[in-house]
Image (cartoon, rainbow, N blue to C red):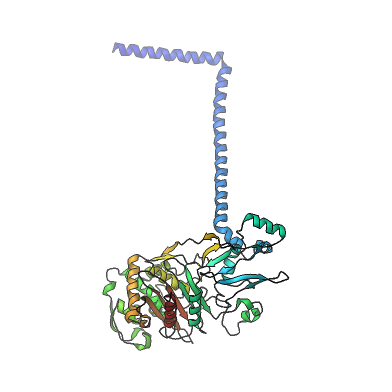
Length: 513
């Protein structure tokens, strides 16, 4: 205890001495104490200023990175669109020094080329006249098709720099690069001939790559004479809309090809029970005062899902949708690109699905069979069918295979890439199985052949005051998923009489090779 008391007393004495020293120092050295305080304040001020400088520096660094990111995006992604814009005056300047390149078919056929007369007047020539008017497009009266989307490429000359300098000095135009397309001239001819004088469209594509092999729209026009006949084309006194690409820019009621969507929606909402679905068809499906009939009033009897799909039983599909959650069914439609803008190298009109849970049961039943207010395009249906053929994955559709200079040296090649996953592999397999039955013992048996197999779906879409639209979508050889064919014929009649025979001619041409 005594030791602890002694230690405490010593500590107290030391504290008193320290305090006395501090007081004496404050009295004897007031300037020194003031300098210490000033130094401390200066340090604090410097720290504050440094923080402010760092904040400003970080702000400008972030701003610089943002500008750099925008410029990179503009150069890599946006600049081709800006350069290809028809209002871009740079194109006119390029045409003074570069001869617009050719557009070629998949085997090198010339689809569009430039010629000059003795007075150096330029003319764009289309050797196949109207055959590629909606895909290759036109040069005069506003560029369209590939003539529009690949303008900058056609006016880029990837030649030897020395040759280019020599041309510039001598006042000669350098030859622009050629665009080599995926378009198969023979398939295009067959599709056009098969469509004949009917209004409508055909799309043929490779589901495994996304290559568009043929795209036909009728009525058509001749781009070689478009300037001479422009007034009559835009007057359109016969309501033919020849300037419109019906394959991509027209939307139609899909009729029974839409049952692909209804079947998929039912499979998703009843994954464990859809194979047990049954319906007894007496040719009519009654909803209040409204009646949905099967084609020709056919009595299909008792059908399961596969047979209902193969025979295209309207009552069965109306029953399926009546059991579904409409909001969930909307999600299925939107996953398959309804109500969705497309991000492609060519414009495709947005397909529409508008059914709501609050709508009438009559509209619901008609939507299930591709009537009602639902609309789609031949290109959109080709994309859905391509995804089914490709195990659920849609490859991005494209028409430019590669670009080469006038000497044939490849400048760049289009990369094949996935565009979207529309469904699972098992869903695609189930739909394929049902589509095979359509050809084996359903509404498209005329497509059966020993040379190849076809899986498809027919459709007949009724329209007010006119003949029905005839539809077919399908693909060949499911193991190889060779080609997809999408056909829509306006005001024609039943699909078996019009769309299916067109598809048959296209398949036959493809397998001639």
